[in-house]
Length: 418
Image 1 (tube, helix red, strand yellow):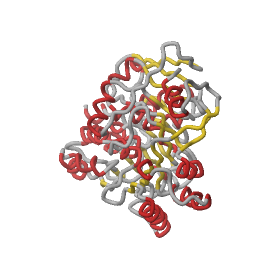
Image 2 (cartoon, rainbow, N blue to C red):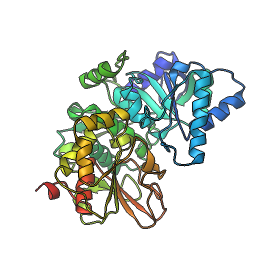
Image 3 (cartoon, helix red, strand yellow):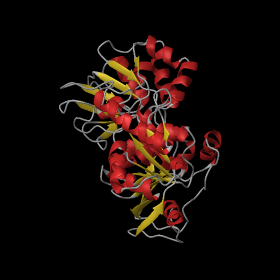
Image 4 (cartoon, rainbow, N blue to C red):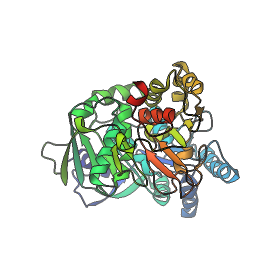
């Protein structure tokens, strides 16, 4: 079996599972946020259940519209807060909250071999730790509140084998954008995307989180990386237990195996309005931009901020470009302060936002007007994703984003550093 199939078999209480088979599996963690949580709570109440299956295995993270942007968003968070108090559920309030998919691993709530569901599509992020994690609907989350279980169809697996060492300014974001450009936004629809090969061992946990985070942008059911020494070091730092390290059998059956040479991957930019519209940054040279966003559950971790600060240190962003920096969690914010990164950004003319999803989904803290162009380290650039339906979002990595903020147009980092 593949690593995905082994984790699903274990949680279904069976010896083996097969692609296409329907199973009922127990969950180790259930996640909901300020948008999806209230819907799940409403369905939970309709069920007539009086208590959740296990409050220790449910987490509420209000991160999409927080700090609350208006009355409606405040009411949504209030629903989560009150339900969490009644049932003893872990709830991350302002001052402790962060973007959910950066926060949960940081808090040690995810272990290798776990089965995690979340009412958010980017729940697939945790596959970077060798877990099966996937996004589901709010009604499925409500059912899990009651039963502690989820029904799933076992996905077939596509194995991606990466060869070579990433070049300068090439990281997890570029690797996954390049991959999506090759297979399309539906190229892995309801498939497990297993990321493997010698390249993976060169990648930090942050880069691995970025890759698995965007599996959903290719239609993937989940993204997953077999745990190794880097995984173990991370887990032993943040969690009480490392979990179970599963790996795919040598004779595991894959629907397809795709090999990619990362030596050929340059810093990438994905043009509107799909993540699959990804090409070498130089093919977009000169495109004027109004806003840059560096943050999100994809690229708001400390290594992302370090990469951006390295580009802008001693420089200033273009006066016509609003440059918004969003540390993914309070701990990332604190670390950036200690390292002097926040001062670098402020001195360069950037604005620092509290941890939030904010502009990524067109929520707040950077909504676009008609005709405006943004370059962002976020994960989606669909029509109207960051604001007005006639605005435009390009996706890229932190170095390209900051170099472009300095020049006022999409630029390769070498254009700034030369």
